[in-house]
Image 1 (cartoon, rainbow over the protein chains, first blue to last red):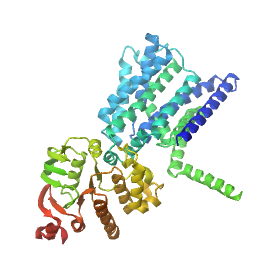
Image 2 (cartoon, chains in turn purple, green):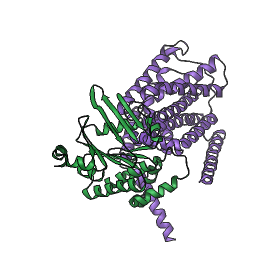
Image 3 (cartoon, rainbow over the protein chains, first blue to last red):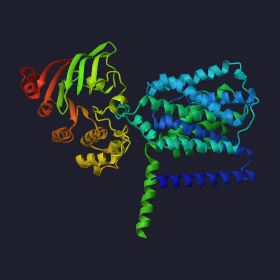
Length: 314
Length: 233
C-alpha cells in the first residue's frame, strides 16, 4: 500500500512536470501568446479556488457562498504587504493565506453549527461584510481600488500553487482525517457516535479551504496589479461554487477540469458578445442535466465495458 | 455500569425528560420501552452526549460523563446504534465498519472486522458495495457492526426493529442476544416493540411522557396489567 502511494506520487509529479514543461515551451516558443498565458494563470487561480472550496462544500458537505470573501482577504492582505511593507512575494502570499485562514476559523466557529440554507445565507452575508469593509477602509483605497501591486504572479507561481493545493487537499481527503470529514457529510450524528470530534473537523476543513482561497486571492492580486472590492462580490462566490458543483461535489479531478473549462469557455464565447451570458447559462443548464442523468459515469462504464470486451477478445 | 440519576432534558421550553433515574449492570440486557414521544431517544442522546442534560448525573464505570462531549464518551467504550441506522450511505460497507474503529489505535482492528463479518455474513458478501444500496435489515446489521467495531463495553440500541419485517426483527434480536452472551457486551435497548424487547431483556423500564412509570424484571413488567394494556395488547 505504501509503495503504491509513493509510485502514484512520483507518477503524478512526473505528469505535472510534463504538463508544466509543455506549457512553458509553448509560451516561450510563441505558440501560446500573452493573451493565452494570461488565461492560463487565471485558470490556475480558479483551480486553486475550486479545489479548495470542494474541500468545504464537496467533502465536508457544507454549502458555503463566501469563498470570494476569503479570496479578497488574501488578496488585500498580500497586496498591502507587498506595496507598503515591500515584503517578498512569497511571504506576502503566505501571510495573506494565513490571514484568510484565521478569518475562516473566526467565521467558522459560530456558523458551522448551522446547516444547509442557513449556512449559505450567513456565508453570503460574511462575503458582503468583507466587501463593504474593503470598500470603506483607507488602506484598501476603497472603491477607487488598490493600485501599484507588483505584478509578480507568473505561470510558474500559478502552476506551483495549483500543485501544492491539489497535493495538500488530496492527501487530506485520502487520510484518516479525510474519512472523518467525509463521514460528517454523510451523517453528522453517526460521525459523532463513531467518536469523531465533528466540530474540530468542520473548522479544520473550513480553515484549510479558506487558506487556499486566500492564496488564490494573493495570486490574483499580484497578477492583476490592482484590486477593487467589487471583484469579490457574491457573483464571484457563486462562480466558484458553480465550478465545484459542475465538476462534482467531492470530486477533485472534476473541480480541476471544471475550473479550467469555466475559465476558457467565456473567452471562446466572446465572439458571440451579446449572447455570451445566455450561452453560458445554457451550457451550465445542459451540464447540470447531464450530471443529473449521470452521463459521465455511464460513459465511463461504457468505456470500461469496451475495454473489458477487447481484453477478453484477445 | 451505567447509572442515570434524576436526568432532565429540555428542548427550549419543552421539558422532555423529567427526573429519570435508572441503572444498567454489567452483563445485562436492559429494555427501555415506551410509546412514541415518551423520550426514549432523548435519554439515549443524553447518555451519548449528543444532547446536553439540563439536570442530573450520568455516570459510566463510576465516572461522571454528564457533560463530556460525544467523542470522549465513545472513547470510554460506550457505543450507540442510532435510531434509523444512520449509516454512511456513500461509503462502502467496509469503510463504514472501519469508521466504527475510528478511535482505536490498537492493531486488532482487522481481527474484529473478521469477527463482525462472521456475525453478519451478509455484510461480508457486500463489503465493497455502497452502504446506501443495502436493504433495511442489512443496514441495521451494518449499523450494529459499526458500533461493535469500537469494541464497546456497553451498547445502546435505539429502535433496532424499526421498519423491519417480522422475520428480520427476530434475526436482529437473536443477534443482540448473541452479542450480549458471547461477546459479553452489556446492552441498553430502546424499543417500541415492547413484546420483543421484554422477551430478551433481563430488566425493563417503562417510560411515559418523560417519566419512568414501571420498572423491574422484564418478566414482571411483561405481566404488569397496566403495561399489558398499554403496550402489549
